[in-house]
Length: 262
Length: 144
Image 1 (cartoon, rainbow over the protein chains, first blue to last red):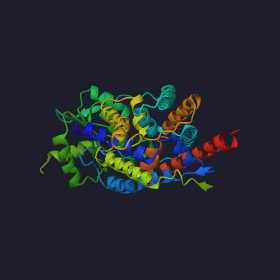
Image 2 (image 1 turned 180 degrees about the vertical axis):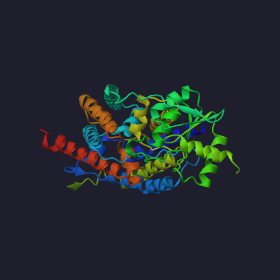
Image 3 (image 1 turned 60 degrees about the vertical axis):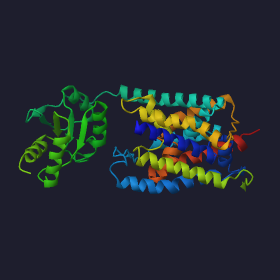
Image 4 (image 1 turned 180 degrees about the horizontal axis):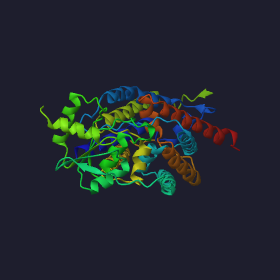
């Protein structure tokens, strides 16, 4: 509930900022975008003011691993600059210039009871639904290159098992087998770009209600700190636990070490 | 280029921008999320369990904002010149474009640039550029 209230408050603050800045007035937005007419540079100051504060906040966020409330920090990891990013942004810019509305201000004006903003938001939601539909079609039509077999898990104890490389798509099957937690001992990128990233596996695990821990170790170079982290993870993670690396050998070794004298 | 000094609102726009920056700062540091409106709305169209409440709470805050502004400062100026057909076309373009481009003015323009992300810089230059060109075409080149 604490979270919901703070999210509501941030939405309120953001909405007030949009109104005060002039962003919710399409006439003003178009005045800013109209370089050839009488140009109103105000909105450059909106972005300037926001970034002035934002730069410090994100520099701090990058140094932290959790939020002030101890929750997960979701920083974007996408870095690719591709046609999709460019084409999408160009379409968005054209729509922004046509009506003077971008998503946030349109939503705020809808809240203010503007009928025209309501029509814009409805069309925008339709556009977003078209995107979802086209994404579903692309992924739905893709035939799998090979039939991925359910990974084999090997029990080492009543509440601990190991497995070879697991992918995000395996998490549902692991949840169905009854595992409450998954520990990933495989460093991101070890198997090249074909290997799934920890954050994707984490997302898939959380989606099916499986606790997830990322504890990457290098084969033959397990450190005492990693053994301690493994012991800690086993003490706190809900059982039964499944750990995996490339073959399962590293996870098994780490488990054995973690059960030895502290 | 001539500057429209009559409509220039440097202090209100700067103060509003600082509020946007503060909201974005709180959202990442307290709630752990990027404040990007198109992404927050878009995520509701493919809902995942445990991933809906925060979006709704935030969006509700935005919807209530005009009411609070009205009480504190009086009615805000909203001049919507676009006709109904233009609004529908513009809305569709903004909806499709922001999702394919993974962000809008808030996610790329404010948060992305604050993170010094090259990807967001390219996106911001692209949508600002397209905005400038569209307004030029609509107001000058193609205007009768």
